[in-house]
Length: 169
Image (cartoon, rainbow, N blue to C red; front, side):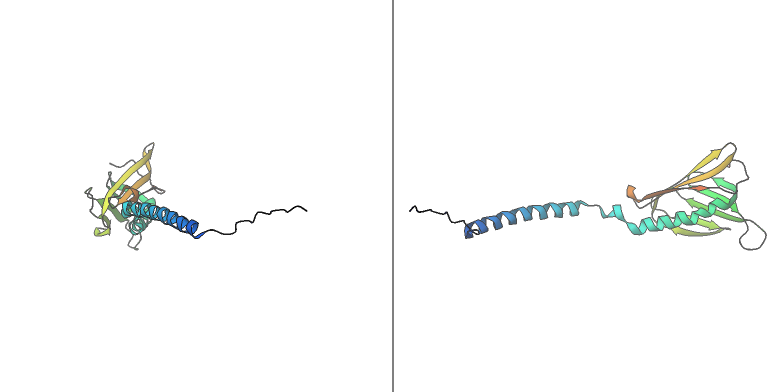
């Protein structure tokens, strides 16, 4: 009769193999953590200032009142002054004005019937562009940048629905 030798299978890992794999895993994990730490440290948190963007968005929403303008009194790249329909029951049109000094960091000012107040702080750019069709101004494109980061820029186009007047100066 022949003897059959069956090789015994090696089950599990030796202590030395486990120690080597733990050391290799530790080195790899330390390298990944260092990379993550450097990435987080270099991130500009000003790029994601949600509070400023929400405030800017609210102001653009408020400026949508310009769509009810009946006449433009003043218009340039940093100021718009318009008549809007009567709102207070005195039979006179209301005067609404948005202006910025063009100095980065200054506030955006809203004036309603000559009463001024600051509506947004830390404005770095407020640019108004007027869309003209024939002899009528049909829309205003408002670009607003809050804070010094270029990521904090928001823009919208406001159609002027009630404009009867010619192009303003």
